[in-house]
Length: 303
Image 1 (cartoon, one colour):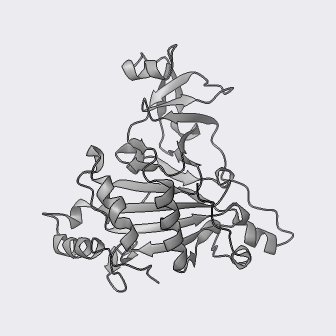
Image 2 (cartoon, rainbow, N blue to C red):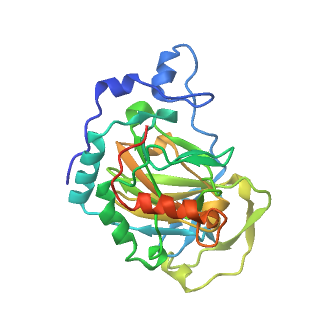
């Protein structure tokens, strides 16, 4: 198994944080200021089990053994081989990484977008990178992704020495479509899902024989918990692919907490176009142009 690349010392002295976001680099530079803590943790933690599609209360918690269905998450383990992983990261590291928020570095392959004004420019976009051609082809072998055509790729580099993280957020829905697809490279992590909507989640007492027993059918709800107090932890093994859609895409925010980055991690996210840019949409011609460029696989990171 290939070892993770060593982070150059100069990277640990550079910071791209703005506004309220911080990383270990700028927290150290501020000296006397107290370091920023993790985002306030939700009161109740549930663990997602991909074999059942249910989220179950964590051990030794108030809701241990209680569960609720959590649709919209698909996890595919060992999506790439160790050799493919090593080659992909080696090729990424040949190109420059840009400093980003909260201790991350990034490489973008996509149009320049102003989401607030809902405008985009093609300047500098030459497609997804050549090393993603096989990844995209392989996605199409799975029924959930057989018609998935990515138009944008974003590589995010996380490092514990920089205190890398990404705060809870929802991806844009004006340009980006129904599915978000992310490949997790170099180390395992946890995708943390939270929801700010009012109301409660109905819980079932997980039957004996969990988790297999949950796959046989739902149990009668007999307890509830406020949505705003819940965080669902989705474990992401190394080299796994995760797909978010439906409620997991549009209603539950996703995050990577600093505490869940134990070694260098590269997350590769692929996004498809929304209906507005698809066939019959009012910007279908622009969408077709974007797709044609993206799937030429001639891209380099945009600046």
